[in-house]
Image (cartoon, rainbow over all chains, first blue to last red; front, top):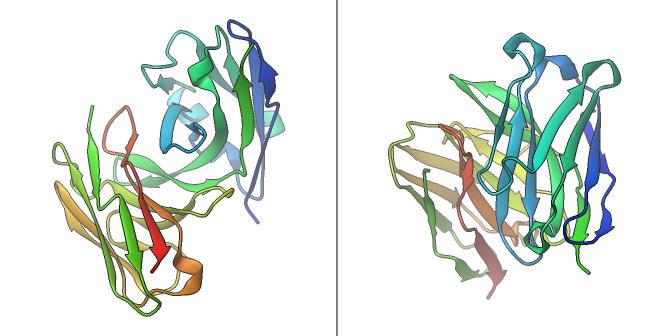
Length: 123
Length: 107
């Protein structure tokens, strides 16, 4: 069974840092792109960023709202995905989900989501 | 960036109703569109990919159609477990974007 389990959320002050993790199991992690998506309280879904697989050089893409502050990485030996968040702002407060990318055509869509971890940025 | 506009944003319906949600893209995205369902306090769940292909395990009362800039999600006969918020999402180009959501509630 495919499982994605996020961890690392919590309360952090504005300007602070936090590192989220996503533990993957039940599928061949190395084959898949992986994504982070967030949802502010009472709001819709917002894509944060993506990391490609080894075959595509682990390259990354980011939303403009987090580019330069957030970094996505992965450790295929541990089936693990990470999101390093620096210079956090109050507007980064959200539930953060990791998602698995599944091939279709020339791109990839999310076919599995984790349960999410809450990040609260507040003084 | 590709903008996705969902309508309606809120929908009140009865059990057994046929429900249709529309998603319009600001530019052509071929069939690079998916639909997710989200229940309160839960993670989203994929329903439809490639605009019209039903994800494994999803009931056949859900269907998707469209291509280019206009897409629809249809629930043929609304069931109690279908009351949720539905999001379209494009994966044609970066940044990946979502529609604003359609909340389906009980009339």
